Image (cartoon, rainbow, N blue to C red; front, side, top):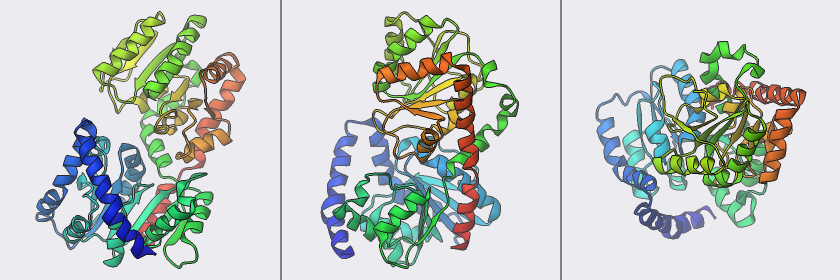
Length: 427
């Protein structure tokens, strides 16, 4: 059956995906960067590996985008500390990761080559990796199949199979079985993911399957260690600011009217609004929406100072600083839940903020943990957003309870990166 899937993928599915991707890149600048980057991958790999000592162990990590990089970073950093005499390379599918990922532990970063058999074969021969390690979900079939044939260890960590996943449907299960059985090791986020992947794999002695958690919790905790003094302050001593993080256009239309009314009803409350992609057009559109409801706004674009001004409404005009700004708020809403999927809910949670988000959260184990422990709230409508916000604002004890639980969820899930590093070395 595996041979049939290899043929279908290489003759039908991936060539079609390649053509559609190239056509779409003509219309979308971000997508175009990713496609052009992939065209250049083999030549860049060739040039880099001419300059290094390839007798060292080479670990090839892959992350889809910046979000998955935050899962990879604590593992890469920890691996470098334990095994200093290795070369760590990191590939991406998206420009958001390639352009913004930073770590002293990365020796070389590049775009993942196209998943055609010839380009994958060429990349594997150039790199000759000791292990290929995928973060979370962005695994490429030909890469896995050919690495398996060449006896190269392949791993996926922070693996998840959510409720109702297409991977559990009969035909698709067969396809994913052909991929998962070709991996060497799989490390899942939770026990329920372990059981679902075990169901897909069926009776097989490969891969080695372990439930080891999500290293992104460790990444968030490490990031906030620079804010020790802030940790010691009560969340109630902060300014009464609602922070909207990584907002999409669907969030704007739904919640800016509610936020405006909350500020009218509660004159001491303020809003920091952070669009997911803060371009000039997007910022102007958000400012116009607030103005329509009676509020002027300023733009915050500082990278070297994180003290927010006193204006009632501030629109964040840069990326990469939101995790630090959450410490100047009391309640957070994280965007994406009404479109592609919610963004990082860990950053506001570790800052002791109750976290609200939309219904598309099933890919995020941390969001499920927040919901189960009452530190987070799934919002389906504008009215629900209004009700939850006003309850958190008006009921002090309820607010403090949810604030404490949000942070406790993060602390209860620490240590995954250490477990993953140990297993990567041992397995």
